[in-house]
Image (cartoon, rainbow over all chains, first blue to last red; front, side, top):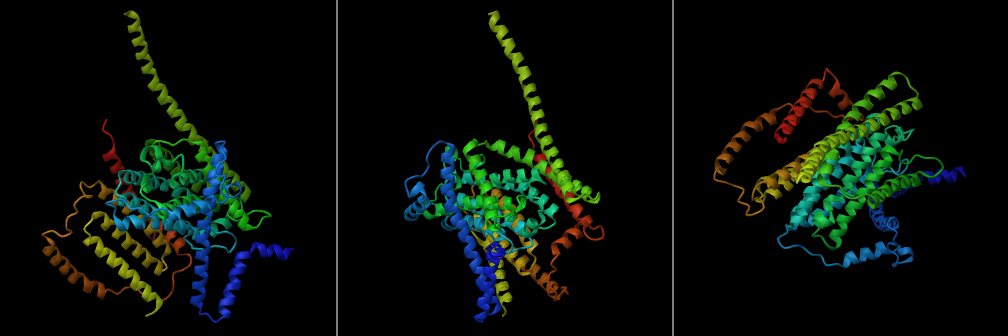
Length: 404
Length: 166
């Protein structure tokens, strides 16, 4: 029983060790063994992204349909489960169009860059102890940096399409992504500071208590800016159908459209995986094998994205920018300083792990409540101030009307 | 030629070639894209030198932020989308002469400089050492703080200029 559990627990590392021994037994040189194993890892990770994409399109439609009291896809296969396959065949057989006056190379390369940059961060996501593409010591920074490469792809798509809607969408997309990268990076910095490492494995190992309960404010801000970076509702104004048709990918059809779409869904997958790693304790959890825990925690984030999409309306562009620059960014800078002070203070006072976690949680919650109360109070005061003279004028107008 | 040297040669060709195309391309937007490719090559060189942190920062800041700003500036330039002119103007000869002279001046200095060499690899705690050296008063605390103050000043200046006049 113990052995079976151990086997399931360490399935992928055992497989890797077996493969390494097998290849060395065949007399492969060391670099060839490393190359083969690297290629197999890359193949597995890329397919995790692609299959995840296929499943997510189905699950999203089903969940949103459920929210809206509809059935969703239900004709292809039992419960419509073959819908992604049908969609894939449809996209493959569609005509591959290119707009007149498009910038050929730029137009054709953009979907590739978007899809690659979305898939690349999967390398540093740990799925279990020893089951990771590469445990870089800059893991989190790598994920953020590669994700930033997608910006270039979005701009190339918007520019190369020779379409005003596409260009407007690209502008909106870049303004949003570049803005929300700042609170996102700052919340990651808080985690890195508390964990004392940038390696994703190191961060998971540092979480004896999941950081969701130690740094709830950073977790919330990371999730919010994650939704914005993925460009999902309520932050989907970069591809708002009713305003700019489809944003930067309006001119893409067939497989190129599928690649852009893939980039979007895999990005959502990566953000929720990073959320699981940074704040939910990654693969760690009782009873169940680590792979299952990783998947459960990832699906939590994904489900939250779908839930938000089914519930919230789209926000305006000025609201989007105000929320980021006037609220989230200052809040995260203050939170970074505050967490550093409280963390050092508690550790210097010799607090136990439990006491430390309680102290950090209390500090973060106090900060969160304060941060929500202050703009609420200021907004209320501003509204009252704006209403008072208006009602006076109205009253005068009424009096004037009565005098006539 | 070892594998490392081959990779280095490839990255060097990528960096320099893309840099050349940046200067020579007719279209301003293409020039920026080639600049990004060149920066990717530099990030690759950092990876080859096992300076992973620098590579990550290079991609995050230069490709993720600065080149995007350049693209915005290019797109806001009037009439850049239509009729891109030739990349050379009538001062090209003078520029070539000055650049050549500058190269003649610089090349012996670079070639004769005693570059520090080390046979040992990058230590495992390089990032930690970097972080500590940035806040150590005996090392780089002062330059680090000066750079922060300068960036802050630039930030405040930018906000002041962009602010609505009341």
